Image 1 (tube, rainbow, N blue to C red):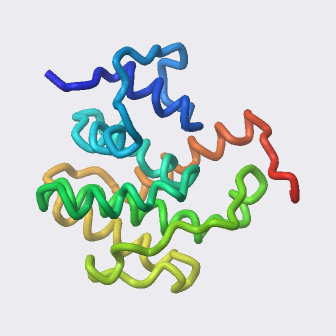
Image 2 (cartoon, rainbow, N blue to C red):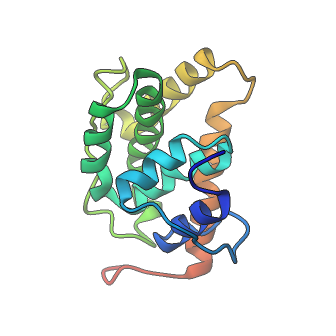
Amino acid sequence: MDKYDRETLVAELRERGVAYLAPSDAASVDPPPSDAALILALLEQPDSRLRMGLVPLFIRHPLLAADVARLAAEIDPPLRLDLQTYYQAAVYLQRLWRSRLGFYLDTSVLLPDLFSAEMGLPPAHERHGKVGLYDLADGWQARSRYPFDRLAEINQTFEHFVGQLEIEGIRPEYA
């Protein structure tokens, strides 16, 4: 049995501004004690939609990069690669859609490009993250035992998140 149930993780994501996952009335019971513990709990979830929730979580909270760097140094290689993949997806999406995100979020703090070199991917600034995003998705697809279109999954997650931001109507002061 998972240490944290799905409802708790959905509620914890919602508390941190990632609210597009159902059920919207989920309650947090015995939540993870820290952001790092939440990240780890999401990584270990069998539900791929919950794991993908890491991408908008990182976009919404770029200061979590410090927790990501610490966790990456401590966890086993397969889980580390998963963490790096979700994190790099957020890095590339944040740069690719920076103008669009700027309508709803403060985009002055960019996620640092922590893993592109280590993963053999293009740097985040290359073509505003587009090349890296495509290469990341191709690599993820190649090592996956499931036939999902990883680029479509990443883009769909981003669209759900932006849809949530549009509904919320939150605008930074400078917008």
